[in-house]
Image (tube, rainbow, N blue to C red; front, side, top):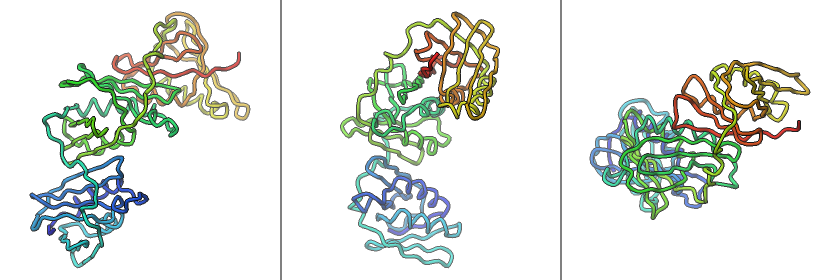
Length: 368
């Protein structure tokens, strides 16, 4: 392998790839980054066997070849080289780097030991997902995933593919977020659970292109997302996702419409006291509006009345203020709508300007 490449481009690709290497793995080669030179570009790949990344950058290729090099070492080396053109060459299991007076030799490993990583996605057989709506949907569901590793399936996002589009659902058992996006070309109905970590990475590679290429390899229990110069692949989470449709309230007795920013401000105010009392804030809903209260044996208490449009029965209900804040931060519109059936049933939180988004929060049961 022999080539010339820009330091800036090489470092950016290496820093992305190094996040997916695994120095603690049983296979030492997983702590390495795979470099492959050919056809006017350098392919840079890494994997921890759960997630993999393959990116390609333009290079002046003089001799094709491939090698793997320690991820941390090569990334730190290139980060500290001067901007401009680098010369790379490999011989056996060693790579040489030359840059404006610097000459370095980095010991690597044979590329044949590196696991196969998807390096490109064919347009045929893949699904085009519009980038903007997809990224927006992710921000409205990811925050509701669980951090409890004892139930791995809840740490991911359920994606339901149907003819009319994709429904994305996340829940941690205390709240649930659902967002639908319209996508054309879905020929087969499937349900898969995507790891949260992979979904968080998508925004870093989407760039300016309008679509993300998506492929589901059922036989390998794997998905791949294709971008302009990168392919991000991941194993799917296994396990049965809860039947979320069962907990969707069929009818409600009270409906409230509030200004989002006013509600968020009052919840943040109440949180000063709620932090000392299991994060509990109480909402008292009556025909005149909503009264938000929180109290602390250490700090005191607060009571704030909010103007709201209220329909139906009066109600008192309590929530974890952090869940309310998370929902309000995910709303794109200027107002929020909340529907209740009783103090022990989940509240249904929606954005009146977005009927494709719905969020449920379980109330906190408190003694009268």
